[in-house]
Length: 343
Image (tube, rainbow, N blue to C red; front, side):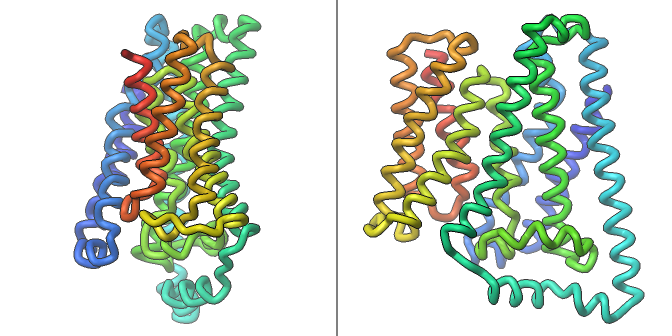
């Protein structure tokens, strides 16, 4: 039952997020945010339900004792994080309500006005926004590599672990900690801005204008990776790199060199569209070849997986408007590759 605190935290987030969405349903529907935010809520539910099965899925020989320790460390880390956040929000609520000047300074309307005044939609600003997403991808590759090295050295065997269980324990613990941090801050920002500490407000300086009245893209991006923890690692790695890397390539090439608008989506360019598709194919092909020991399939199937992922990425890029591509890209490309792998 050591998994219970983590599962309850994410199920709790599902409930809180759902209450917020339904409470503001009318304005969410009017601004085409309802479906997207509803998907985010259910991704929290999926994370909470699937957590008890993650560490052992690829490691069926993992002992119950080792599994309990992994659950315990994750739950302890996330519980401490939640406790610190609760006390931080309560403290800021108390000092704000006691001091009208502080309460006036922490007005979200003023924050939005200041944000819009300083907003820059140039290449440098876009690079800053994409860096955080790419860091998520770096974490996945770094911990997998660390687990592979320790496994080859025989260190993990002494602890009753293997590459998958150890690497995924680190990835999940850090990833879930990241999600908890941003979602609690987002819920405070959108509901009770005065509860948010001043140091946390700096996180939102690089968000997009379209995210001012909804959740930042980083949260659904990480949560959408959860289903693919049950797929072979190269599929998870491809999904993460497509969602962060290929999307960044499409965005930056489009912003720097794009001159022809994509008719199906006027916010994007044909140049960025082509660059994103090319990057997707290269990513899936390269990851499948580099990590072939964990994805033992034929060369022909690797090519097919690369083509399917590219096609799905392009379809999302061309036609998606009201649902974040940080949700649709990983979900569609990931399941597309996974289905081809299982055939």
